[in-house]
Length: 133
Image 1 (tube, rainbow, N blue to C red):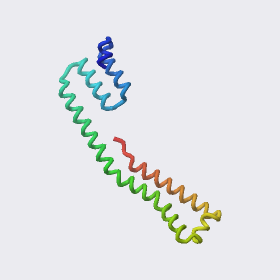
Image 2 (cartoon, rainbow, N blue to C red):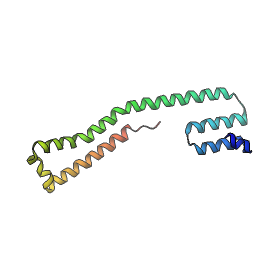
Image 3 (cartoon, rainbow, N blue to C red):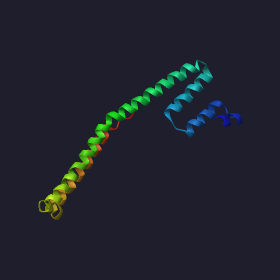
Image 4 (cartoon, rainbow, N blue to C red):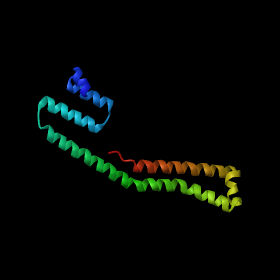
């Protein structure tokens, strides 16, 4: 920004170029506030304080959301892996009991249904725990 300003680019344009180079909502808000204060006037320090508080609160909210959704993520992993692990254990303990799953058509359809339902469950849990701030 300083190099562009020294070369003769207007400050507003140099700040907008910064936002283009570094896409960030917070930076865009800051540049917009600077441009408004530059053209209209006002107390830039108060605006910076307000923006800093808002960015801090947004960051705290993001961290809190990540902490609260961690349980859902672990549940998704458990729901996804538990049937596979149990199937493997059953196959190791009693291969004759599990052999029809591999050798018969209905067993293959059952395995395909299990995989499909696991993927659907994972996607549903992921959609539930995905929160945009």
